[in-house]
Image (cartoon, rainbow, N blue to C red; front, side, top):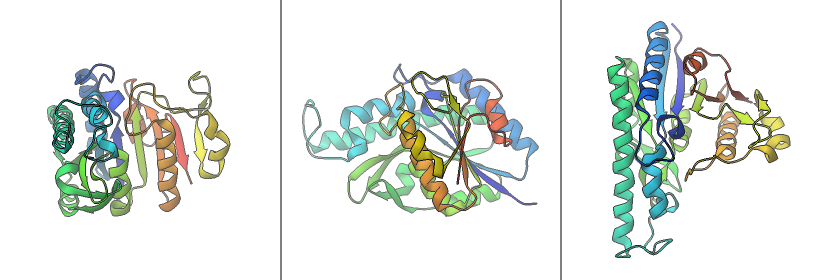
Length: 277
C-alpha cells in the first residue's frame, strides 16, 4: 500500500478565542479531533503529522517580551526589573503557555480515540535565525511507523544567532517537509482562503500558481487578530517558496470553522485556496 504523508496545521485563530487570552475553543477542538479520527479510520494509507498554532496562549507573552525577534538584554518597552533575566523568563512563559494549549489539543485527540504523541519544538529543536538546524527526527519517524499521530506546535526554541526565538508551526513544517517529503500541507484556520480583495472578502481565489502570485500579491492582507508570526501574506509566500523547492507538493489554505470542511480537505477536496507549482 502506497503511503501518503500530509502535514495539517490547526491555526491558533481556529482553536482559541484569539481576542480573549488563554481561552481554548473546546467544542471546536472536539469536533476537529472527531473529523481527524473519521478520516484516519477510513484511510490506513494516510500518515498525518499535526501541527497547531498558539492563538491566544503564546502570543500574549510573546508580544510583551518580543520573543520572536530574539532574547535580547534590553526590552522593546520598559518592563519592571529590566534585564536579560526578564527576557529568558518571558521565553519560559511563552513555552509554558504554548504547552498549556497543546495539552487541550492532545486531550481532544485522546478523547476522540486518536493515538497521538506530542513533540515540543522547545525540547527537541535548535534553530539559526528561525531555520531549524537540529532535531531528533528519529522518534517522530518511529511514531509514524506504528501509526501514532505526531503533534508539533508553535513554540520557543534556542537559536544560534538570536539566543532564543519562537518557531511558528510553518517554520517547523518547513523543516519537516525536507525530512518527510509530504504530498500536501493543509492550513486550517477561520479565513475561507486567500481573498483577492481583503478585507472586503468578496472574491475568493480558488487556486494560486507560483507564476501567478506576483499579480495578486497586492490584494493579500494580514490577519484580523494579533499574530506575532505574520499574517496571510507571509503564509502564502512561505508555502509557495516550499512548493518551489519540493517536487509534487501542494498546499491548501481553508476555513475549518464549518463542520465537515476539515474532513473534506483531508480527503483531497479543495475547500479553500489551493497553492501549487
